[in-house]
Image 1 (tube, rainbow over the protein chains, first blue to last red):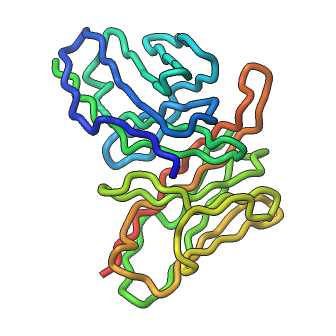
Image 2 (spheres, each protein chain N blue to C red):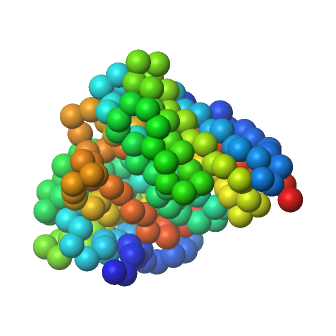
Image 3 (cartoon, each protein chain N blue to C red):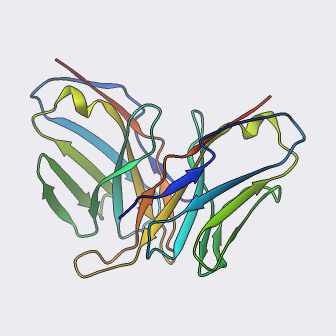
Length: 111
Length: 117
């Protein structure tokens, strides 16, 4: 059973702080990962894609992948109240085009 | 480009009925995936269609079925509805790999919220 694990939260951070969201996965064959953001009552929207070990930066977002530790993270710098949402980590299943999603971490950014 | 569209957006059914949900992918996207999202289970993969063929299938009972048409539009059907089928049903269309993005990328529609009474 391929699993992607996330702490459900909520993770509470003050405005302007760095939010760190983490994800572990069981499928050692998974090579690539996506981060999606989902606002309450809305559908997931794509934030980042990462497939190489190390960091990938896009604006205020940095995704980190450590394949040896089977660990993926998302850092949000200068967090804003509008970042308050549930963040979903998804791993690409090895040998397939499908994704396995974690249950998501709720982030609350207080003004 | 227009995004993924799903119809209807909301649906109320009673146990035992059946339901059909529709998804129109982003223009040029040939793969469509369906997911069920519930508070307890999160996003769970139902099935994926590519060029009118089911390419992958999740662990759902046979009451859940789908199909894809030649224009890439997809439908999913749930027969003999149960209370536990109440969920947000999400469709995602996949952008093919490209230089710098060696993996299909899924973009989600707004979802259909199904309530079974």
